[in-house]
Length: 481
Image 1 (cartoon, helix red, strand yellow):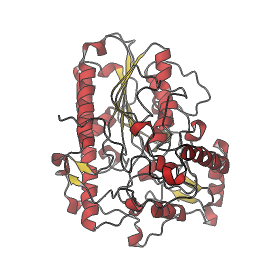
Image 2 (cartoon, one colour):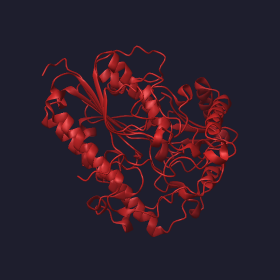
Image 3 (cartoon, one colour):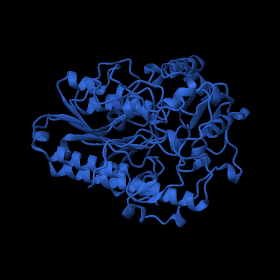
Image 4 (tube, helix red, strand yellow):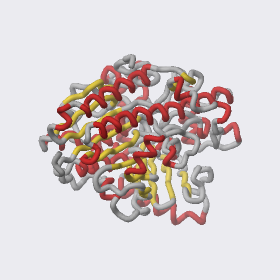
């Protein structure tokens, strides 16, 4: 095999909290394959999604542009290829670029840059959760799923789908065509996304009675921020109205799903090695966002706290430092330049805000680099923005008071410092960083205007509120292994 050959394998999961990862410091979860991947490369311990919900975050991942720059605001406005992304850039360069598994774009027919899509998973019927675009005013959504009540050790359509995706990825990597020309392969797995049902042998790795209790719950006396409480009131199915037994069982199932994901990643990496492609392939692992796993009495995503807005990020391959933990803040936006860099293609889009993770991995830490995240989707009364710089993180909520945390002193984000005079300068600095990126009120109005127009196309708020999947996107297949 030529030393000039440059392959890239992108592995993306769904809803993987960075706090449930062995190499990230969680001693309870079993993730030997992730741990091995991190040992062979560089792990970024301050990584963030672009938006803590699937569709907007994945559109930002595809394009290398922020959500407010593209207008893919929520789970009903999905990526359609109208904004060029890294896959288009690869196609233009004549590079083989294919996908297997979950993309969560609008549909498989749109020109999103892939030569082919195998087992693609996109928003249902190309319209997704239209009800989530009804935001001004916010209706109370009593139809929201009760996420924790149904959990435990069992197969689901999602785990069967992931098994099929893993098998297809292994076949793809070991087929003769993978040796013929340089390629970029994207593999999208769904675990550990809810429903919290893990295949029995992975669920059995964890004793529900020994699972850690979620922290910062209102039932424990921790007050919620008013924006967060409005979100919780709008989506009561995500709130913590469950028994302690149900919470522990759901947590054990989430850990089991992470271990199931780890096992699938291990199979894919074994296929890469078996094909003799590992020495010429850059591997990128990440997720579209995290999961609260009961923190603050809530489940799922959508909030700016690190369990939800934080993500795992690992890169491994030729020239990447092994066993390194990089503390530079990074985001999914950086994957655009990373994929092109790994493929040996120059980045010709100087106006995109990201940087190659491969470059950052080889460089000294840049703790003052700014990470940014935004949310405009279901349950949000107004736009919410995150700015991370150094040890501090700002949550800016339009029309609501901000939150400010010192992550070095308070990694659980339990003490809001926004009103503390001693942190006034820090707060002002982070607010200034935010206004360098956008005007919060202007962007909030733009998102709501686009969403209102979409809602009207579906017949107005009362009709639109009934349209779209209530819970998770259905898997396109539920194949037996």
